[in-house]
Length: 446
Image 1 (cartoon, rainbow, N blue to C red):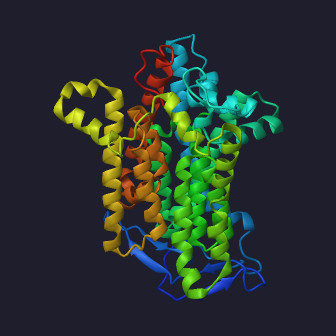
Image 2 (tube, rainbow, N blue to C red):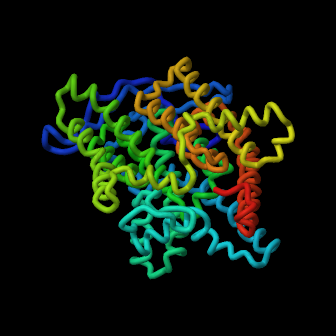
Image 3 (cartoon, rainbow, N blue to C red):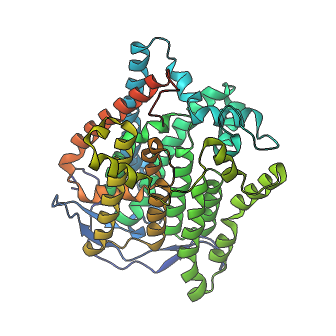
C-alpha cells in the first residue's frame, strides 16, 4: 500500500543492485540507460510514504510472456492527467463568470488573442517583419518562433482559425507539460512525489495560462522532457528537447548548460560519443534563430532590441521581486496593488522552494546537478522582467521547486491544497479577464 493507493508496481522491495547499464540497441554508441541501485526513502512529512527513487524505479525491461498488457504501463499517468484536467475547471469557471459579469467579454476569443496570445497568433499568420519597429506598442521580434509554429501547424491540421488553434494547442501542451513534469520528477523523487508535484503545478495560481495561447506549455514540456531524458541518459533526445526549448523562450539556453553538465562526466570518464554529440546539437536551434534574426533585421539579438519597444530599457539585476516585497513591507497600503502581491508571492515561493530542495540532500535524495542548474536558472529568469505582473507566471518554469514542496507536504493536505490553489487560480484569472476591458488602466495581466 502506497499513500493509500493499491499499486503493486510502486510497492517498495528490499534493496537490490540492478545491472549497471543496459544497452538499448546493437551498436556500441547506442543510448545507454543507466540503472542505478534501487533505493527506498521515507517522506520527511512523517506520512509514511515510501517510494522507489531513481531510474531503477522505472525499469524498462519487457514484461514476461503472459504479463499485463502494454497499456497497463500507462496507468501511472492517469493521476497526473486527471489533476491537470480537473484544474481546468478553475479556468472554465473564470471564463464563464467573466462573461456573466460583463456580457461584452468573449472568453474563448480572449484565451486565444488576449495579451501575448495576439502576438503569437499574428506571428503564426504573418511571420516576422523585415525590421524592428513599434507595432501597436510592441514588436513581434520579442517572441520566439516555437509556439507560433505550433499554432500554425495546428491551424493547418484542423482548419481552425489561428486564435482557436492557439487555445487548442496551448491546452494540449499544458497536458503534455504535466506529463513531462511527472516523468522528470519521478526519476529523482519517485512516483508518489511526482503525483503531488503535478497536483501543485496544475493548480498553481498562474497555471491558468496553460489554457491560453501562451508558450508555457510547450516550453515546460521541452524543459521537463530534457531533464527526464538526461536522467535516463537519452543524450540525443535530451539535446532535441533543448533545441525545442531554446526556440520557444530565451530561458531555453539553460538547457544547453544542463546538457553539458550532465554529459561532461561521461565524456571525460567513459569517452562516449553520444554525450558529446548532444552537447553540440543542443544549441543549434538557438544559433539558427540568431542567424535568422541577423538575416532579417541586421542584428542577431533582435529579441533583446525588440524589448526596448516594450519599454524594457534597463536590466534590473533580478531585483524586481525583492523590490515588490520591500514595497509591501514598508507600506501596508501596497497590499492593494495586485502586481506587487503577485511578485512577492513568487519571491516567497522561489525562496522556500529552493530551501526545501536543498534540504532533500539531508534525507538521502540525490538531486542531479543539471536539476540544480535548471532550478536556480529558472528562479533567476523569473526575476528578470520589470513587469511585476508576469513574475508569477514565469515562476511556472522553475518546476523542480514543485517537487521540493511535494516532497514536504503530507498526503492528507492534497485536497486542501488543490481546493485553495484552484480557487486562487480561478479568482486571479477572473480578475485578469475582466480587466481586459480597461487596458489603459489595468494593473494585472498574465
